[in-house]
Length: 233
Image (cartoon, rainbow, N blue to C red):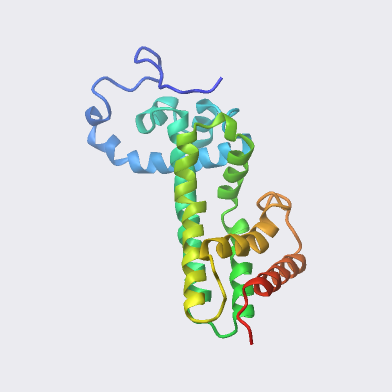
């Protein structure tokens, strides 16, 4: 059964009377470190066990803290899950935006730069392996996660990355590098043919693809993209 609420105050894991503000100053100073340990453990356990099967007890054991400590920071399991997936989505979206800026701001050769961009994006499957484990959990258990949580994650991660790609598609159209009637659709196409063409067959990095095969997939994806959107001449 999913844990949704903090234990009652009469249980051994209940927060002390007076709430967190009543704790000694030394305890309050330790709160940020405890929160980091909790979120790190939650990321690991949710990614390994999924949302439904994960218990607060398991997260507490992984973090080396009590359930009471977790409930001092998070109201329930869902709030902790939401915090972890939003943190990961925001971090990865920001990283991918930087990758885009690095490869796409100054175009030397469009095909080569798009391939290099695609390859570095694919590298994030390894760099942020715990985040993509959570994405597998989200996709597998979407029916068991409240729509508001899914919506918040979509907005912080996938949609933000799509907005960045859409910006670059419009920018390339203005510069005459591409013929793009609909920048948002072009962004979806580039993502599908490069990043998702590697991410989905590997289950977001769970089943690694050989580097030479990744390069081949991304190169072919860029070639197909340019066949549709490339500027004539």
